[in-house]
Amino acid sequence: MDTKDAPESPESTDPTEASDMGDVVDRLIARWKTARPDLDPSPLELVGRVIVLAQHLERSVESALEKHALTLGQFDILATLRRHGRKGGLTPTQLLESVMLSSGGMTARLDALAELGLIARKPSPDDRRMVVIELTSKGRRIIDGATKTRFKEAKESLPPLSADEMTTLTALLRKWLAQVAG
Image 1 (cartoon, rainbow, N blue to C red):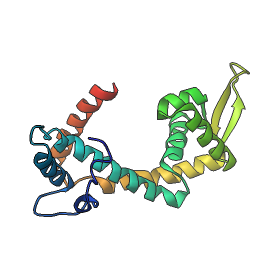
Image 2: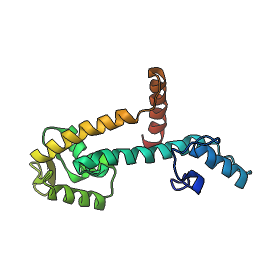
Image 3: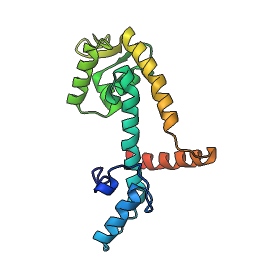
Image 4: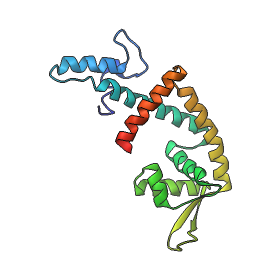
């Protein structure tokens, strides 16, 4: 399912909209069954819901991080540095591997974070030709506050499932993710 497939018609522009036909994916599948009865749209029941949920969750995270004046991409970089240690200390290549951006995208985000005073570029102590990215004191304060907000948002975004259901869902998603992302 292409991420653009979910809001395919006026009836499905709001993924939270409920109807007699179920959720947005149920309506999408019903339309595909009518439009292309020769195809089996049933894989979209899971894949489509994951895509719609991912879009919703990303919007929720972006909204939560606005109060820290951070985007999700900026948060990812700062959080990676924060997890790495007190000051950070990763090369742009190491960061690139951690957050899965293009090198151009990484450079632009690093430039913006440096301009905000959240990171500093320093020569590598091991190889003066390389640069190491470190959190500044301001960057550490910002990411520590944003992390509290992010964790709270994640908790509030969880579905109303029992502990056993959450354990099962987590295990199944882990299995699927391991297959596609290693």
